[in-house]
Length: 195
Image (cartoon, rainbow, N blue to C red; front, top):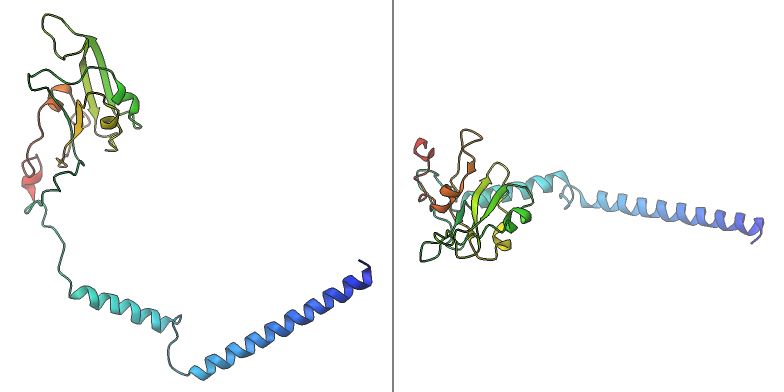
């Protein structure tokens, strides 16, 4: 392509672009002038009207505010959103075999498990090993449930007891003995009587 062709092409392009732009601008200007005082869909008046319509629609809806902790709505039966529970077999032996898979699966490093060999005379769990020490730090726990998924014996489950408050860092670390006990019913946890 020669220099003359390039010059002709750029001149034609700029003339066409400016003509199109001015025609569009004059058409939109005349359209706005023809509307008069009716607010368009993008105007501030229209936005305020839509916002007020939303407000008036909400006035006649039923309140969904819960008076917690005066009135405690129990969560759905299958909602697992709360404290962990270490389970036992029907014969009283612990299901946890101290494999530490839950601790490895935890992305927040909130679980500490120390396994030990079982005493054949007095077994703690039905396997060869048991959890000598088991701790969950609830200041780190993000309730993701990956520890429950990793457990091969279903020894660890999440309950629906979500009322957990701590006054010190030490209270937030639950030990094996605490995790073997079922959580208290909703409304009986420390701190709920203040509401």
